[in-house]
Image (cartoon, rainbow, N blue to C red; front, side, top):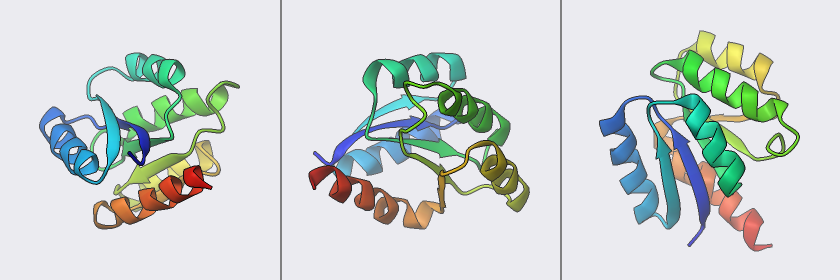
Length: 121
């Protein structure tokens, strides 16, 4: 296993498809597709290797959840990766969540591989 990952993606079917691909690549994946508050609690309880947020759909939901996690002492240092999204969504998120990484769906597995390698060191 490469590590644990919590996926915030606001379309359930797309979330399950992405989770299947991530699991096939060796990640243990939990999904939050409905409630950012519940997802933040899940992050605090599990303290995953990395948190992945979808910015392509309901970017504000991802941004609010990430901001809440970034504001908490217990979770602020967890790696956060944002996938896809408009230029505006990415710009707003960069302002609210410094230190986050931004990638595309096509490059997500490669980006996550970096976290897996860091964890093994």
